[in-house]
Length: 608
Image (cartoon, rainbow, N blue to C red):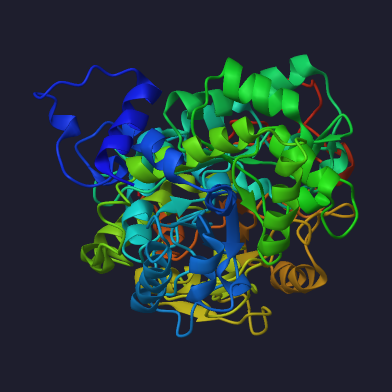
């Protein structure tokens, strides 16, 4: 196709007056390849050149393990790939990631129109899938910090590390408002009130920068739209049974804030609203998100989200029709993307999905690809490799850990710890990087053990005092110690597996360790490493001190900085702390008595 037709398409599409002095229309190639032209002109020109197969391919996001080779990207005209939570290249190094990305990107550029891929990952607390990356506290800890500026800096640091591996698209932040702490994604929430998620939407600005095509900027994703934190019983992928008034008052505001910040994409929730799956929820997507809120970016499904509409395995034509017509622009179909393309093609040919809907989805997708600068700079910007796990980023994570600690109890000023005191440390989470990092850490559900480099809480304590004895199960403690520090709580999990419909208390291992410390008579400070409040009312009376550490990530020394008073605790509870699991859901304003109320957090009052 010659330049003349390209000009005509671009001009007619946006109604531009073309003159010889219009620099945007200079050049001799196709209009969409001319970086001087306005994005709308480039999109219109490219869309006019695309076949139906080109357009359907752009709407597919496959798991990189779901393509047999990069050649599948070329033949399928795929618009996007993702690495799921446990989809890392081997070996898992930043350079291997960059090489993998570039290989797939070159395959996309080999298509007739040379449309680049956009590649997504769940970098939800740093570039957490990459070994050696800086792992920041999970969102619930950042909510406790009440520090939007810090969160914006974390967004920027994450974007730089993501960019160093080539990735353009981050499936973060989670802007859910967690209303029932039984939910396994509670730690991905900034807190139980919409104001917290709204304030912390600064992370979007950090991720995206002032322009998406700036070096070190990546596209952010507001997820999961909408109401996923309000399901009955805190059941993951469950049913949010509330009025539209409550949905708008509690769950919608953070998404409005995200749209106002120019967030590039919005991911749809697996959950339902009053029995209607969000992936088929045309009113909330088309009418509220796109029209009322004015969202112009990409609406993306969750992983196999369309397949879950009817509750049966395997997507049907009815599910595909419902989801695309409901306003989903890009579909995350990890493995069966070819079947999805074939199904959608048939639906378009039958008139069940209008071609105008396909074109609208492609305009949104292509607009972001142009805005990201992918047509000009499709390959990895390897200048950012050096930022991955850098000292500057780890120092930022260290500060985030300090600011996220919440001091809940401090009888007789047992804290801060005396650096010359004799300290006994116990607990399964004291010296375990995986436990303190939680889910979404080099693996979807996370893993206990030395899964990433960093500093454990025990290592941080030992760097602050030379009189430290450690026994994981508490064996060996006696009256000679001034204080015991028990680092206990949860082990890693992510959604569904992390749901706790039954009890929410400490496990038998923790209870046995705490009993040994109690029997010794030594004052005990408990450090809880957890993704949510735990049911501790029966034990908290035995403890002299209590610090909620959340899931601090790779820089455990920040916990020690607070324990020893090098940093006066400033964290405030982003959730209401239940008196018992039977109180769930319990939230600020519902008039129910809490063990510790929303916003609670002590400081050290004396000098030392």
